Image (cartoon, rainbow, N blue to C red; front, side):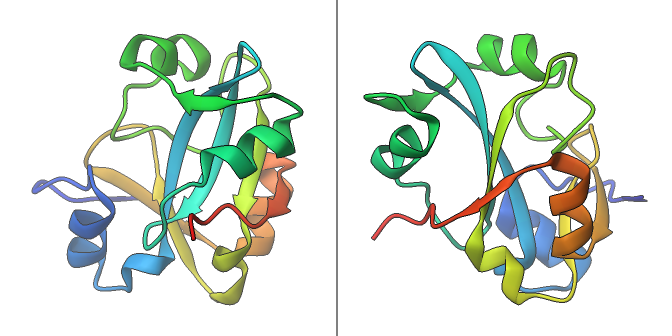
Amino acid sequence: MRRFPQGTKTAQAAARAIGCEVGQIVKCLVFVAGGRPVLALTSGANRVDTGQLAALAGAEEARRATPEEVREATGFAIGGTPPFGHPQRLDTFLDRDLMGYDEIWAGAGAPDAVFSASPQELLAATDATVADLKEA
């Protein structure tokens, strides 16, 4: 784990602090699909297609979770949410674009902390489904 006093709350801030491409940053975003929280691990360069995410989750629609819903589902605040270590198992979807990097960086539970992993390590740790999440 690495800490950056200037913060890593956004993908751009994290990439600047680390010295990597924005695409290597894993945004850990909680959505509500079919009334239940789901986690989208998406490349910092992409926006999530909520229609595609809803279909993957077997729901009619998906929306961004509120800050309260994020904390309830993950135990963490927005801006430092890690991809695992939550009080409940969340259906998790990993952006296919992240698989093209040797090293990716994700939040480590605080707005100034990140860790690195290979996409394969993150996939194994989260038991995620690799999917095309990017908004067209």
